[in-house]
Length: 357
Image (cartoon, rainbow, N blue to C red; front, top):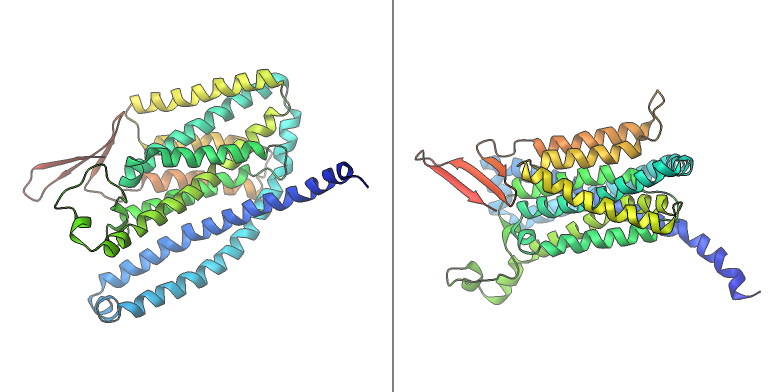
């Protein structure tokens, strides 16, 4: 038997396995997004009690580290198994409906779908770039890092356009969990360990890095590197399903017209965020728009009663908005100008304090 005759069978057999690996990775990262904030919350509870704080963090710090590590590993393993089964079921349940919807669309609706989905990919990419840059200095300094992660996700997604299952239903849950994780690390962590920037454009003799030995200075950068790695993977996983579905729809369109709509939608996505930024809106509006567009394509069946995957999509979309809107710093007013984040608060002496990021 010739190699050409065996190639299609091998390729077809490998396709579900590759998609399964993506879902498995998504389940692993989703578990991490849940277990890390829970551990931070538990540590803050212990820290708030003077007795527990003196016992764990001051007298027995090694024991505290080992305890939280053991709980984290055990919880992560359990959540990963549950999350993997849950995501596989969610994707498999919705994939056929999404594929059938794409096949039934008329030519006019087909090109409209390509335009909207292309705009959504660029809009979501720019939202992640700007929002993450306002949370941690490392993202504000290295904006291309989030950009490259999103481009990587888009490339993988378009490459998987001809494969099944369609992964779009896992986008909203992953987006909500990513928001939950990053906000927890930004506002609920016990110290500013994620605010050290590995490489700085300028330095000072008063910089903490210059006052420490080389090994200690390098150790301070470990949390920032871990943050970069985890966020890079999450950004990739968020963009893959949207690009895959957009590519799936483009396969049914005329090549030239499809790419034209893709380009038009990309320009529209950039223009949409430009308009929302010009109106001084914040992440609540940005993520609400992105979640609404994602939800519109996930609700492929509007017949009552709604199915479980529809409720999951609705819940994840609401979670994106609620988590972003939650007042983690009630005494600080966050103002998103067209260019940067401005934080306004009041000092103990009554004077106004303004920070920009």
